[in-house]
Amino acid sequence: MGINSINQRLRGFGREAWAWTSYDFANSAFATSVTAVIFSKYYAGVIAGGARGTDFHILGFDFNIPGASLFQLSVLIGTVLTIFISPFVGVFADMTGSKKKLLIVVTTVGCFFTAGLAFINPGDVLPGGLFYGIALCMFLLALNLYNAFLPQICSQRDIGLVSGFSWALGYMGGGICLLLNLIMLENPGILGFEEGTFGVSHVMLSVALWWWLFALPTFVGVKERPPRRDINSQTARPRQVWKNLVQTFKQARKYKQLWLFLIAYLFFTNGIETTISTASIFGDQELGMSTSSLITLFLIVQFTAFPGAILFGVLVDTYGNKKVLSLALSVWIVALIWVYNLGLFTDAVTEFYFAAVMIGIVLGGSQASARSLFASFTPPARSAEFFSFYGISGRLASVMGPLTFAAVNIATRSLRHSIIAMVVFFVIGLIILYRVNEEEGIQAAALESQ
Image 1 (cartoon, rainbow, N blue to C red):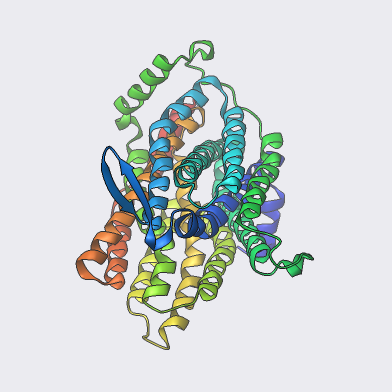
Image 2 (spheres, rainbow, N blue to C red; image 1 turned 90 degrees about the vertical axis):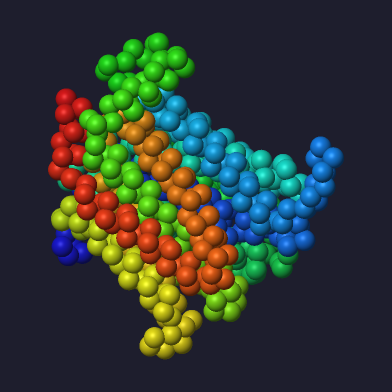
């Protein structure tokens, strides 16, 4: 499929699909500037005392926790909150027909707590961790609700391209905001300001504003969906929400392919998230790369993921989700084996950059095709409920992957061996994905919709 054909299909998107894709552009600023690069480093190194850590005196016990560990604990707060809350939010959204209202609410709360990070000072360990944990929880809940619209805003034929294009916009939005924030901190003269004008507090305010401002097209342009036909929305009480959630698990066999895919997703997204989150550590400790070189590497991944997501979105609609996702996971495996053996053709740092380009292309592609495959298995009337489980699978991966990486590193004292552990996750995910029957999963979702 050529560029002209892609342009034709993009022009054929409905107004609602275009409005939906803008949310990826909006919320990626939080993922990059807050979680991945700027606030995480500031919290661990400045607010929580860095390697020196923070002293605590609780119940007569004195102990010290390093700054990096305290940041991970704040991530854990947001993750655990999301795991417990998201299924109930998803079921409630479908039962009451309130996905859009809830998306607006949790986004606004998330932006509020992100802006609140601007007022966290060195030593404010507990308020900073709590504010970040709540902001992260809102970010993840909003992502689940946003994803839940995918089966409803476009046809089955276009679901891959719409998903891929929105992921591409997300990488572009996150990259542009991160670049703007780095200019604010390191070279404000480009923006016409004097050196030292901006600090981390201004970055947090800019991210909150970016997130909310670019989410407005989604808030305005995406239509609210009616409640499920088999539910009386007026009686959607907590007890009924819980009963509906239990009923979903009892009907698991009805959605065999969806749940089988979720297991595969749990494994390969372990590899994806852990590889990205530990790439800078690997570059620093194994290759001795400078901070500026690592930032450059991160931006390369962001911007190569843009065309990669679109390319894989087109391939999905041409060849099917499962085949394209399998291809992306295979490339991941090859790329990580290359990283393990850096220095085969030239110096290790140069090869690391080339491997980053390779990973960037399949990063957006694998995430976009995974989301579109899950969306094709999801009954539109229960999309928020099922996408909450999709989100939980991702959150479990964000805990399991780093723990495995750390355990292998402690046992072997080698980051390269930890990379091979990630390869194992991809291989297991690929094997389970092979057992997924794509046609059967799509048919089950269609039957539920009738």
